[in-house]
Length: 79
View 1 (tube, rainbow, N blue to C red):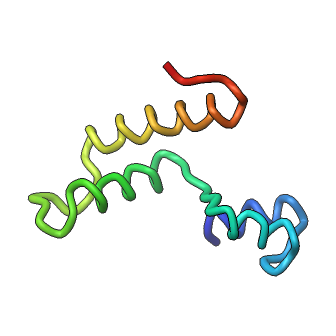
View 2: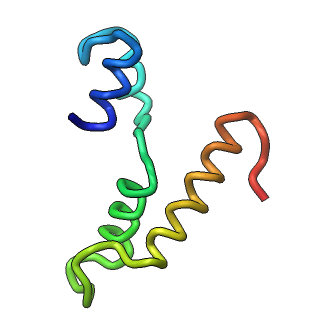
């Protein structure tokens, strides 16, 4: 089950619910360290990377980005 599916299930929503559509229309994504580090790896390392999976730097960057997103979502400015 994907993170999005897990979130919808925990909220007792279906994928075609108004709330799910609202999240999708606004580009809201669910991310944790694993999914964010993989996204960072895919974007910045790309197909020409000398490694297949996110490395320690990708994981560290993921944690920093997630922390910044959490601050903005809480209404405070990240430093």
